[in-house]
Image (cartoon, rainbow, N blue to C red; front, side, top):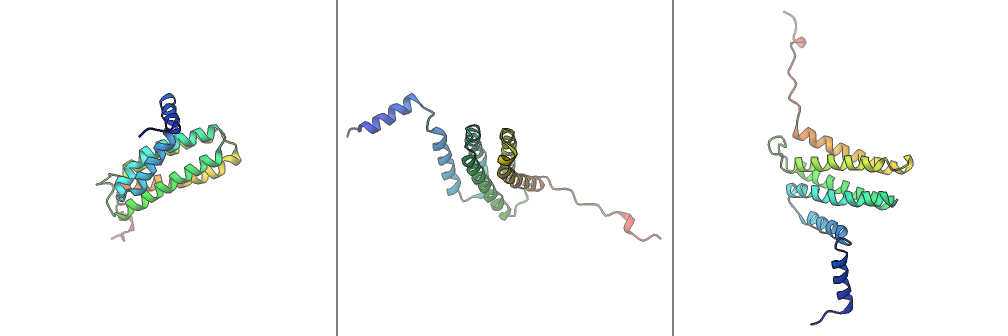
Length: 165
């Protein structure tokens, strides 16, 4: 069986421009793996690679002034992170003792917030508004995970409430 001219052209293009279609294919592959994964811990572990790929695309779109597309990718990342967070919460695991998944998601969120902040400085105030709404959601999820991973010790009861002898 021989390949047609279209297939040959694609192969030649892939050899000459090896990274041309890679980012979108990588994101699609990671999203597919993410969507198929049923284990919330494994899903959370995928967020680092997925977030990294998506934020590279977000940065490219912001730089090219394709803000609606960048916002769409950011919202998708937020929805993926929210699904992970809810899945981890549903496990009813003590994250302080068993941080697997929780710490990976928290690190991904913190890194994503940092990267988003870097992109925000190139936007006008009006352009920032929808991005800041998503940033707020990411920050709340990040804070929730930090509280899960590093819970405050129970407060000691003070003797000041006890009646004087």
